[in-house]
Structures are given as structure tokens and as C-alpha cells.
Length: 400
Image (tube, rainbow, N blue to C red; front, top):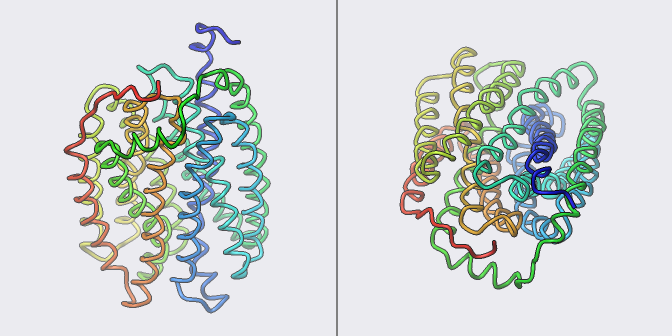
């Protein structure tokens, strides 16, 4: 078994491997919105149809996350991530069919792959291996991996689609994803043996019952719903919103990429702030800032310059919620069941993502514009800010 001193020196390998997993899973999926206008035109479907497929992916990801998290807590994060990597690659390959069946089949597999190889399992591995005093910052580093993936892979996806067509582009992305995710999963697997020696003697129903009787955990879970709604709407429908204003897909791809680039800094900053200040207060401020950035952006018709400025500002408050939220889960209940307990919080996030992706398309098809949905994201951001204020940052020592 690895000694305590060696574990302290080597935990950054876990953080790096987890960051790569999050980078690939989040980076490739953020490019799907670029595909929506051409897919809808080729297949004669409205934007609600494409939005529904993305929404179902988000919902399935959320529903499967607590299950994948529970398996990771019991059998090891790396073992679950290996299967998640393979399923995720198959989902991208199915997307290359460029037909409705390929869209829904691919999103189904991608949802399952994200549950096994995405945030819940990857951040759970960090939570289990990193010392408590450095955990929130390390979670920020792991979460920033998703931002780097968005910055790097969205433009790559756009270039591949332009040069090769979407079918070949998705096949290339599938091979790239598996080539990066599998080695990272095996790195996490090297730490599963040690984690498996921890005592997991409490019944899961008792753990969950105690967690969901905790008002602070419930408020945190409700607040994360809003994060999912905002992020999924922007990632799925921003390219379509820009296309409606005659702004090219190249600008749209760089807009999504800039969100990822600036979120690297935003997530690291939030992770750092979470080690020094109240995590729940940081979350409230972050949601208010998101709403402010959105209302400024939609107050006038977008231009390429205003879009890129908006993307940079939004990126600073994009996924900073993740290290703060997951850090609170670990602070409340300890790391042993973190993958599963964060998985349930993440389920709420993905229910919000379902609403953001689907409702954005529904309201667009009903009104021929996105204005109502933009206003909903602003209002919900303020609601989330209020929800976090009563949270008490206590350590309940339930599952340490």
C-alpha cells in the first residue's frame, strides 16, 4: 500500500488524470451546438428536435451519475472510468451517422459515458486522494480541465467539420477521445486498490436518507439546477442565436472556445477562493455575476466583438460552481461517499441542463427568437444566489 508521504507527493497524478477525463468529455460535447443549424436544415427538423436530443443526453447523464458514483465508491473510480471512456467513444462514433437515429443513439451513449468518465467519477477520485486542506483548489484544477477541453476541442471540431464533413469529424473525435481517456482512466485505476481498503460499511439508504434530510445539502442541490440550465442553454443555443443575427459559425466556435479559455482562470480562482472564504457566499456572488453578464449581452443585438467580450466575461463565471459545490459536498460529509453524493447533486444540475437545452429550442420554435429564454436564465441566476445564502458550512462527519 502507498505510504501517506508518497500519497501526498503523488496525488497530483490523480488530479492530472481526472482533468484530462473532464477535458475530453466536456470539450467534445460543447461542440455539439455548432452542428445544430446544419443538422436541422439537412434533416428538416426544428431546433427543438436537436435540443431535445441534447436535453435527453443531459438528463441521462444526471440519472446515471449517482449510480456510476456509487459503483466508483465501491469498486474504484478508475474501473468505472474505463467503461465510461469506451461508451463515450461509441457515442461520438454513432453521431457520425448524421441522421435522427444517430443523433439520439449517440446522445444516449454519450450520456452514459459522461456519467462514467465525467465530473462525478473524476472529481470523486480527486476528493478521495487529495488532503482536505488542498481539496477545493485541486477540485478547481480538475474542473478547469473541462474548460481547457472546451477551449481546445471546439475549434478543432469546427475545423474537422469544415475540412472533412461532420461524419468524418465525429469519427475522428471518437478516436481522439478514447486515446486520451483510456490511459487517464488506468492512472486512476492505480489508486483504486488503496481506496478499496476503506470501510464502506454503512448502508447506502442510510447515507442517502441522512444526506437528503440535511437542509444545507438540499439547498445546494437545488441551486445546482440553475447552473445546469444556464450552461446547457448557452452551449446548445448560442451558435443558433448568433446565426440568427448573421454571425458566422467560426465566430460561434471561437465564442464557445473563449468561454472555455477564460473559465480556466475563473475555475482556478473559484477553487482558490473556496479554500479561503465562504464557499456558499462565493456561489451566490457567482450566480449574480452570471445574470449580470447575460443581461448586458442581450440588451443590444450581438456583434462579433460583443459576442467575444461576452464569452470572455461569461467564461470567468462559467464552471467555477463545480469546485465550490463539490467542495461543499466533501466538507459536509467527507470523501468516502463523495462520488455518489456529488452524483445526486449533479443529477439536479443535469435536470436543469435538460430544461435549458430543450426549453431553449421549444421557446425558439414557438416565438422565432430566444429572448424569453435569455430572461429566464437571468431570473434563475438570481434565484440560485438567494438559495445559497442560508446554507451553513458545517462538517456533519457523517461518512468520514
